[in-house]
Length: 179
Image (cartoon, rainbow, N blue to C red; front, side):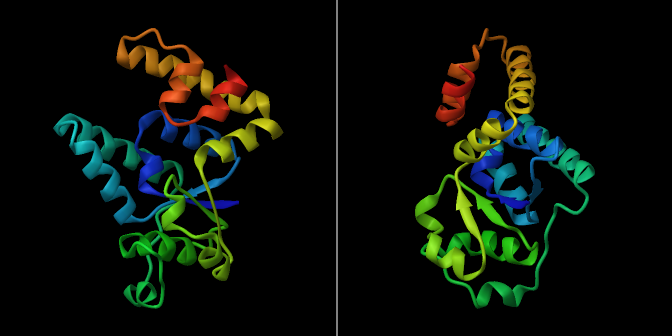
């Protein structure tokens, strides 16, 4: 299964770490475009130049891990597409060009299911997808979550617990399942 990761799921960090963690174990193949990476890096830059540099480094690691993950497409592709928010058409174009199965996004309103279905795509929020993967492979997801929790504790100097960390990352169903 190939899935385009919208910029809003690449940042925040915990959500991205969970998604890429399960992807690294073969749960799905992540796809993105240069513009999606630029949006992520722009958002990270709001937290300072170190945050932008970190996002750029993590994007480079993604490219190394999934060398076919970065999708480019002809400029004319966007011209034939429609979404309620024209600023999101590039996400749909990347999904089509990458032969993705779906788009992971928090912006359900901007990606109507009927429009995506015309292109053979689905849309889902990361919490639902991660919860579904957890139902099918609980040990895998629990292991990734434990790694993310350890990293969050180390990097933030905060004694995070699993449930609050995942809830803060907008993953409430997964938080309840693993909590």
